[in-house]
Image (cartoon, rainbow, N blue to C red; front, side, top):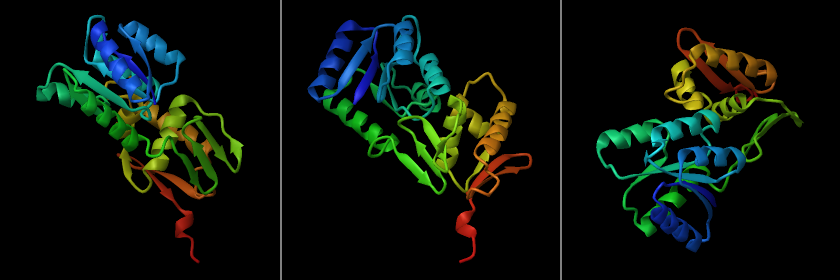
Length: 231
């Protein structure tokens, strides 16, 4: 895996980098929040490892930015010197996939990284083949009947989440938190706007095997309808 590491302690960063490279991972380290955010805009990483307490920002702010701008596919593991319940819950609520308490132990850190990668991306980022739709998560592309559709990043993230959660009742607040982040400044009308565009672009009226149905006063339900056709 290619791993991005945010750690302001240079000795700790060098040690973590050594452990990762010894385990045959590649990595790039960043000592400041500003450098880290600039780096992950330019370079693609398979997993992000970030310190929670930083001199020029907080892990919470960084994690919120990641989930709001890069989506929920990339796994994130937090390293924190604080093991109190409130800190752990905050990290997980904001979108961390797992956490380590400092000082990290090398074998535990590597095992947790591998476990998170398997859980979030089993067998690598998948290509979802769903009837008339092909969703390539790795390349951030979605095709309908073999034709690639033009989607914004949020439309793509929302599409992937819907295809991964068929048959479930999904509230507007839930979708807002999952796609835009728990502390997003946008409101649920943004969800409705994106849903409306996706219904048109992806033809989610049942004619292509999938139907996105509004649930009055709650949110939406996404169902595969071709399975319901009589034999």
